[in-house]
Length: 114
Length: 115
Image (cartoon, rainbow over all chains, first blue to last red; front, side, top):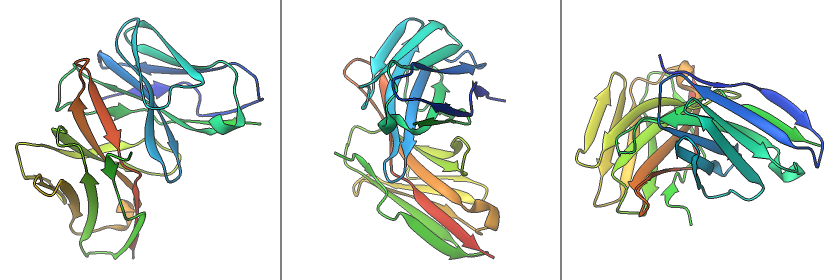
């Protein structure tokens, strides 16, 4: 079975804190993604990575950075958390870079910035 | 610019009847389409997909129809069950100039199946 694991389900952080969201997949997938989900806005892509140490900006990368040092692990970093980054964050992975591949999601991380 | 649109934020259907969820897209380069189901406080789970070379794909109670000329896809659930109550997202993928693939999601439709 496909497994994408997000280490933290619920976090509360203060404005200005540095936040790390960790994600691990066990399918040996090349591609990994970070999305955020907000009511009425659907799922919006923050960053994705198509290989170790490779990354590409998504639609809303501002205020975020990512790290992929190992194939199975993809981290999302909020350098200085702000209240407008309160959201549900979803990590996902998919197999090789071709169409017809399904994205598999983790269970999500609820982040509240106060 | 919303390339993938789900114009109905919510839908209520009686148990046992058909649920039809709709999705429109604007980019003719999309070549693969997916539907996901999401329960509150959980990640989306993959439901069914369709390639742009097909117009229909069926999996049990779920059928996805693709109308490329209208840039429209729909998800049919027959018969609907209370456990189908969730938010449904459609997604489309296309190859970017960089060679990578981009997945664009709609805003979701909340389905409520009434017992």
